[in-house]
Amino acid sequence: MDALSDVADCTCADYGSLDSLPAMAEAVLRTAPERFAIAGHSMGGRVALEIYRLAPDHVAGIALLNTGYSPLAAGSAGQEETRKRGELVALAQSQGMRAMLRQWLPPMINSRRINDTPLVNAITEMMSRKTPEIFSAQVRALLARPDASAVLEQIRCPALLLSGREDGWSGPAQHTAMSQKIAGSQLVIVPDCGHMSTMERPAEVSAALRAWIYTC
Image (tube, rainbow, N blue to C red; front, top):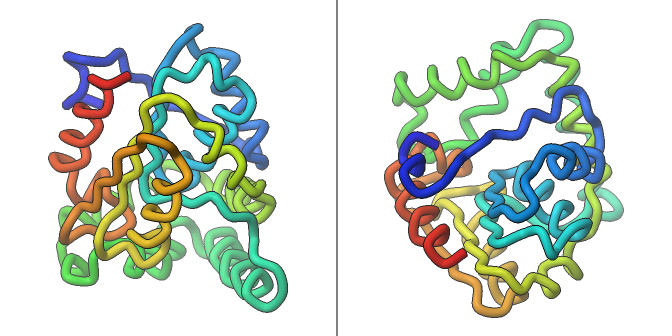
């Protein structure tokens, strides 16, 4: 936000204890200006797609970072995701956010930065400011995520798709597929970067967002 302050009036959404992506999108729209560009990372990217679904004429541009568009998978794959997310929620509730993050964080960043103490501490401090109750609500929202395939095909504003080359959760292949569904979209793959792109490679992400903002 600091890096873009000279070209954009940036605000950051706070979803509180809301536990559905459509409800989060409606909360953003209640306070948003008449016309705005929106960037969302991970779950926030899915919220951005819900915002476009609800109010496409208000969105001047959309940036989707390290995110996805598919609903929870059917069958064993969906059951496994539900189980793993449930275990993380239970750990957060029983031992606190920091204990949960020690398990959650390693697969989310570039494996070569697992021992990058400043990065790991920064992400841990950021996420520890939220409670297990908020974490549980957001997990419920993600497990009930809508299928946004049709939304991608409807996007007519400047669109940026960005992922880390080493993102094992929502990586380059997924963002390439998303980009192919959005006419005229730009695809950026950040090298030496995992899922937490805004904190792993802030300069590169800010540069991509700056270039996108100029097109909005």
